Length: 111
Image 1 (cartoon, rainbow, N blue to C red):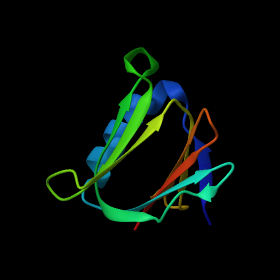
Image 2 (cartoon, one colour):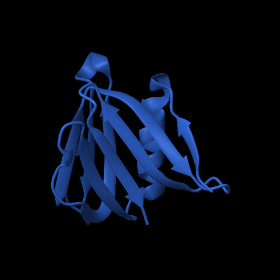
Image 3 (cartoon, helix red, strand yellow):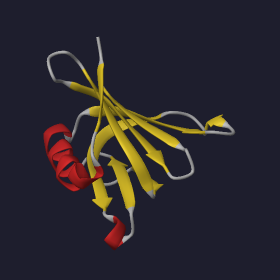
Image 4 (cartoon, rainbow, N blue to C red):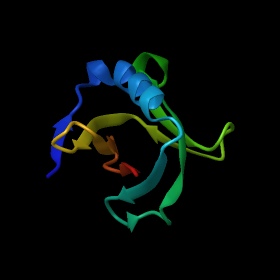
């Protein structure tokens, strides 16, 4: 059973650094869903490089990058307003959901 937890915005910077360090190289699937159109293109798969968060004082965006040694794909979430993590009972994170101010949902699933 999954447990969903919202991550407070005050913890995002530290969370994304720790998450990136702990999961770099893991296979991930990235999906983007808008309110009006549903899925925006196909799901992207790759190995996680990093999640880089710039706080509102520095631009207010989150960049998700995949690749092996170099960036093969990147996706930017502008003005994120909510970050949720889904984790197993044992604490293993299985997915992140990031929602921006336009209601676009970005889901990063770990394999």
